[in-house]
Length: 384
Image (cartoon, rainbow, N blue to C red):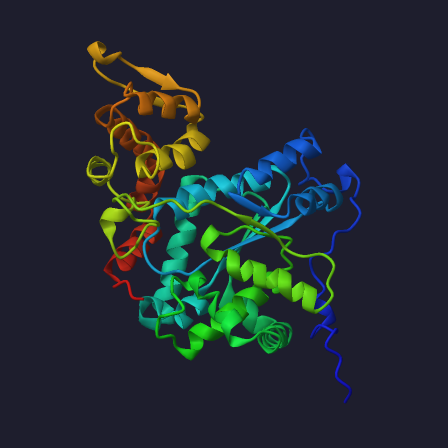
């Protein structure tokens, strides 16, 4: 049979199409009061990086209901970036008229040896993740947000999925795939299993399998998202997935570039008790008058301000009493000048975080299903 390298493995994989916009009345999910520019700015605010902005604007202009995708390995307890930051971002996207598909990547967690490769435990952790997002306030009414289990979806449409994975694998050399292993929390120098080499090809395929217009993942996932755009060039596909990469919150200790589930002191977990949050913030790295590399200020910028739109600090009357910051820039200026001290900032940060987390704690203490899930997840050993 004659080979044709320009033909993708299945016509059903022709996703990412930007179709002419329907009338507003034909799509109730499309915001009626937001202009195109307002929608663009709201979606763009989700990402620290966007590839490419002109493509994003065109997508929002032409497609009535853009599809955004994010995926998570169920790999242990959920930290605040995964819980609160994700909720903030998803709610922005749905407000701007997007549909969000959250890929519960159970098979991927197994490939990456999470929970010791025990799929039953991995699925339990996945159910726990969903309970947290519901409790913290993710806008899941209607069909704005869809939770999809990778094992179920891939098994039900295997005839679509595996030819696509194979085609991506066939078109890329091993060094190119190895450059993507950062997506699994690995490095090219690690001793990788064959499964972990296969993983990037599968994650790249997910984007097309889910018909995603926007890849809304962390900056640590950008290499595989770029691989997906390169694959579009390989198969002469015009509309490429837009990459909207959100900021990665650092760990709470000095020099920790990202939170670690294996180091409880590095992050706030979504069901941490009030006292635990206070203790972790009290011990967090927060050098006086230094904003750069200060994890406490990062928490305020990426969690507190987007949630409350202000930051309230209470101090003794001789130190100025209560002060309400209306912008992060105002807070940074005051902090760098010495007007705001870590001794006042930290209790205010802990109080704000506890306010956000209280509904989650309530849910996991009162709901029998959630309570059981948390007990089981806490009993699991985190593996790499």
